[in-house]
Picture 1: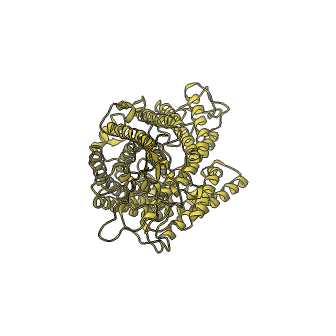
Picture 2: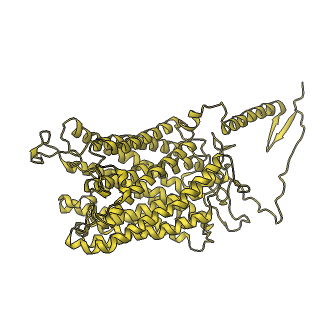
Picture 3: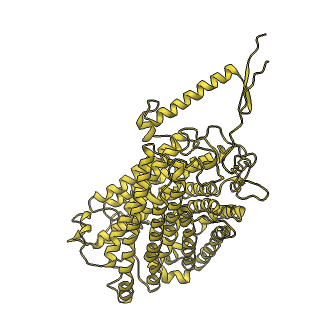
Length: 638
């Protein structure tokens, strides 16, 4: 019998001929990777960078697109704040809106309504949700659970290509006859049914966006359940994965009612139906012939059945990002991890039974009103549990005050203010006075602006090295944070005083024409508008920092000595992959999980942190350098 030579590869013995075949396959894969990096012919350019099925590149597509929409929505807000701060003053920048929306540089009232409606729509549906779920979720969830990709890569691609056209349709409505949507981001009928043609474009765009979210949510759920690594039980998930998991269920269950409602409202506009149009409706002295039998409150129920879970779609991924940064920045496990997980699941469930607290003024009875007041108070409990756990996680930690940590720390009190100011809005007695005032604007924006958006900024600074192999500049990051922190509070905190004074929202002059609002509007609106301009200026160093390093990374310039795990993190997206990860497959070898996600400074262990996929704690490197890895070569006869 012929003898077959064996060699040892790592911890495995292999026949030499089999090892040779494996080597040739490995070289072929490496050539594929190299060819892809340098524009090789293995996949056409359009397949790699436009219609990609790689979850990481789709996440980057979502991220860049969402950041552009956020910038656009922010610019619309700047135009609104110029009008509110100095009503009736001509600004040359207003002329970019065209002759139909301004007169001599003075913003017209109907144009103010259009800017308000599109600001809300763009920031929520085209900016924050795609960034939180589409970008961060797509890029990180497969890496954190040890999966080679999403469960349905082509469905993932289609999800993005429903989102992008939906956003373009929304933007195209600015050029429609009569202008874009002007019925608020809530699109309340009957006003939205009789509005200009731009409202039809708004509804069509919304159908595309909802379809994108539904496809993405199904993909996330299947990926997390079916593709998690061996040994990765649910209680070993990073908290970010739990947050994305619950968020996916919220999207899957809450968006279909709004998609149905959007189609029904579209039929009211173009097909003469009357799902939301009441009988006897008279517009400009003429009775509408298609009005009859519809109910405007039906739209409100369908819209808010989505829109309150949508608030947690905005905030849960942000909480997940902040939890990852705080655990890494304090060098200790999250306090009350299991309580946070159960609170997240309970919060997701309760978000479906609180929607009517937005409708206390619609004339609902005291019994149903009491029910929704009770559920609203109950849903505050899981939010408090999560926030309290994050605060307590700071105790005794060796805090690293990096730029991501600054944004994460700022999130905690800012979200706390947003949550506390929401409690009076959940009680009918106080909501009657505060409803549709600037108090509501202040409350909501504290949740999503210095709350969610600060968390997103922290996530960008934290995971930018993972996606590019380069760190964003810390100095410019701190400038970005501190100016943003001061200015964003200067914008939104005075809104509470305005709301308590009874100043209504959606007033194009900020209340200057109303006796009860004139004084406080004159005292606060110019200051708030100056802060808004300051917030715009604060984004310049971030934009430069981001684009400079992204372009340098695209040209192949990596930070020398940065390594694949610059934050010394324990979760698998850092510890078990390169930075950036492999193009397809993510991992050279699919990892096996042996421990929880936050093994920092474990008592009795010499290592400061232990990655999830390490079977034993790595030995700390000796002073003066690290030891060379041992090697083994042998001959063995069969």
